[in-house]
Length: 497
Image (tube, rainbow, N blue to C red; front, side, top):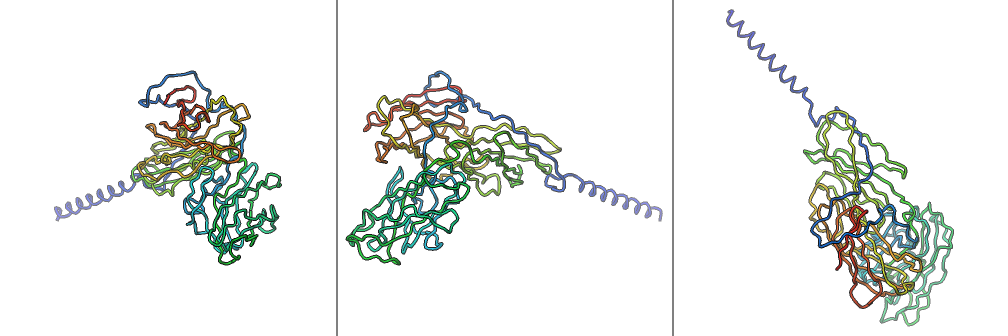
């Protein structure tokens, strides 16, 4: 009996030990336990402009220092394309847009969905497609103006079938209801015939004398009319077909004097699972950075921080995990200053995390050395021919997304002393130099093409690339430009080609 009692006591003791042990294991802190969190305070330091020397790109000779990008003399303020639709993507997505909320509507609210017709080459864009509208009565284009400093002109190409409209009234409103006429009669110069239709008619309307409220959107309307028919067929308002292409607005964007967007984006992922933990964005002012404190559970994390100071939002993928995270800046957002950093950190307690952001873009500059008169040059467009830069910090960067169909257009005035201009090329954080190729198209003040040529080089982010040469000399010859690669933006390297 005593032996049985002792055995029972031993068994009970063993059971209690097991229970206590299990209880103790349940009290061990799990990195996935979101019931407990710590404060992580991110401290943003001065931007870092330094990079290590560029290697193995060619034979270079060091020249005298250039000033930092922040000391580049201000450019002569020129008109630019604020919005441009070539419709070459087969959609109403704009090629150039300072606001993503611009849109087309026709016949009391219908959305255009036919972009199958042959378009016309214009302003550096290929012929491609045009917007097709059957039975067009009216077309309304809504464009936000809150990022516009001043609006100068609205232009487009238009044509119609033999039974389509040959005239229109051009109007505008800012309340969406009461329209005011800009031009009452706009007869097509080329009406075509019953056997030959769709000849191009180009229109441009200067609106810089209209008092606009730039805090409100602008609606412009085309009210179609039969017009003088000439040798074309009889007007059929319900069946006639209208084609519109190269719809554009020019003027000055606020980004030319200041950036309308100053925004810090961040995303934090669990380092072990790659799952998204938190993502958001906060605006900052020109005077300083916001404090950023987050509550995070214990664990291992990988993060990315991006600052965007420009006229347009960044295109960031729908975020689900670290591997699929990607970011892109439209080439048309050509003065964007984008800095960023990726960082890995552990959370076991309240911590401060200092972060040093690096330039994720490079400056591309053209300097023209012509001795001849360049005052006849009115516009220069730049079109990238290289694969667009999509920054994928944690995943596969090898995915090919084709060629960028965007351009940057500069309305130039070479009567001024400066014969140069620049833009920013977003690249992300590139460990190795990447190829860049640009098609340069030169037009006179009547928009007639004088010349086009290509330039190319290799660079990575945080560099200054300078193409220096004569713009119009040997107009039938290949461009002969000197390529300068400026690292740190306070030193200069030259490569002749």
